[in-house]
Length: 484
Image 1 (cartoon, one colour):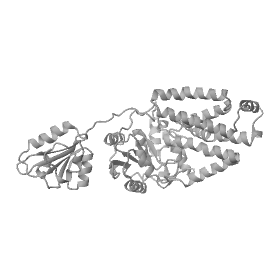
Image 2: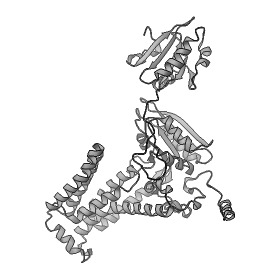
Image 3: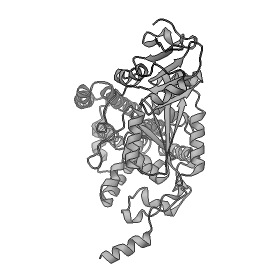
Image 4: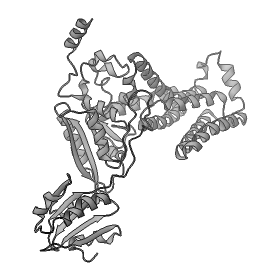
């Protein structure tokens, strides 16, 4: 490296930054790039070879069309040039004092190939998942939504990391107010480094102090395609293997996209099981504490001897017994999640059996409570969205404490407080409990029950789409009658 232009001196402090001269007839060309970010084959074959074959070029304007690369541009904005160099572009500067540069994309495409979903794995449906490359993820979206109305806008977020963020929506379908609100919040993000889309997801939500997520994260391109066709807005970040979309309501967190691949009766029953499981997971332990502490007379005579005999040697009150077991379950869950896969599965299964058996034999807990806590933990796993699953796990503890203080009245008070919080919660300004509050009869068809596709002739009205009709129901019925 013989000399460095003044603007490039800061970049040259890094060991992986390369800057060298390429001599022309009039003035030298300075070529700068990060060797750790570019593809050396592109540099040799498309850039250096082009320069070697153009010895008589006297300006960048004459050199620009010579490069056989699609992604190239002029710029004299140093901040823009620097940002592009960090993205894997090669900067070519004419003369030592010039500011104007040609930027040629030579970014390395090394990365993980498209694989099966790891978190949202399904038996039915496509087996592709997002990866860490934003361009590949956008390709997966484009393949599933080959529409001229699909709009993709890119933004740079983060004062230090300068991460690429893409927003996707369907023009003429998605409500413009939602698009404006979503894009404005992305532009207003003030943070130095955005390492994953989950950070961005938390920063743009309506109420960042709520434990309830107000947008849905997913690793499935087909789920994002369905959300876009429903009138929702999706965001993806370069370097993150997941996307998220909004606005959403509470009930969408208990819907898995596999429901749309199954017959509607089976899918509806599975949804009911999930929602009942969530209620059981939240209330089971707190009801045990309330009944055993204050309302023993409500226990049926059939179960009373069994429950009393299981607790006769337990030295702790029900609240201590429940808290110990809940914490043990959470410890097993965290240990299983943090350890390598094979070891984590062993810890979860063997640890649960050994600790449960030892706790009952040591009279630290009753076998009746052990069954309740185990079923409650299993019920929480039925929630398909991880962030909502974590919320359900946390919700159990306020209910348990309220049950210890006021019994069933405490559970009722805690439920009222929870409902009041959900009534105030919004997602991009849309009520969180819609269509039950505000109540909308026409939108109940795809909440608890997944109807047959003949009933999907209109989109959900609470999304306020510009085109609420998916297909003409009358024409569809007429065609079916002719075929019959």
